[in-house]
Image (cartoon, rainbow, N blue to C red):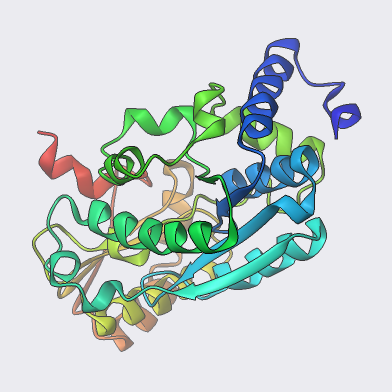
Length: 277
């Protein structure tokens, strides 16, 4: 893998070297794997640094995660030749999660990491590592508190790797998802305080499948009850407006009364704006 880093900027190569040193110190790891660019690069570096037999990729499976992510994850682990497990995590049976408080992500992450901790203890793994990156400290992320409490390591963030640097590195080593849109659980589309149900999650996933089928790559459908608030990048708003019937009609068929287009455009974590005012 080092040869494929040769054309990367020297500062980025230094960060990748620090990441490798962190992984070497851990010896055997479980990678909390989502199939996104961050955790895919971390998994690739873990397998290359520690050898595949010392790495286990584990993906949490729940109705809160889009089903398409599982196919991507399976493709990546197949390419890397690492051991892979999918574990069911019952977020929807946890009232602290389904009530959708501002620290919802803490309860979700604590549940997932608790299961990974059990697997680590059973399999003799020294640490759990996640794909948290250096940019993640700039947003409201209560899930980080769960990582800190459970002693989880974040080699990418600890090495100072940003999202852009992760994508550049993933591209250099030919990971097919190097430029994939950022993943986020479907619950992030529901305003805090509005209860999370399987029905809402299914409707959101189907609504976002509509946008994907129309050729949009980066988007969110925020579920405000009767209102679907569609976010696409600012430079795609005009395109979305020109396709309003192709978007609105199928979303109304899913049960939304109103379909709106957010004029501020797509922004990750927009639901956090109400608690950051």
